[in-house]
Length: 173
Image (cartoon, rainbow, N blue to C red):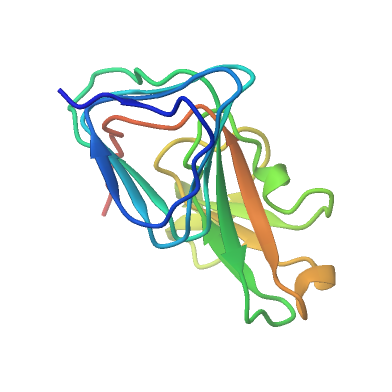
């Protein structure tokens, strides 16, 4: 029973482990790059608090749940570097209700997801289709790198309720 309560600001390297995590009003928590926040249970972030996972930081939740018990919003940052023109990066959202267009916002680019049922140019099933709107849990999206980011790289910031739980995916042959 090691519930984590961040009653003040926190930004220290190293792994943290506990049962649940609560970030109360006024607290701002950053899990730095290379560090892991490992929990058995839920994450709760108050509306005027923040929990940020820097690039290469992880949130791991081990409790088997039938529905997502997390509340509040977190930010997950992911850096993309060493890019070339016409590159696509595969993304999957770590948070609920995240719009695929926000991966590269404000730049509008091509976005695709794999559809096992779409007939391709060879007459077989399975093809990339245009993607828009909310990213589905457990689904990969190929997002084009905006020209503006080729030389500098960029950080995608996923903001929302952290995803948790099993994701069932039909696999076809």
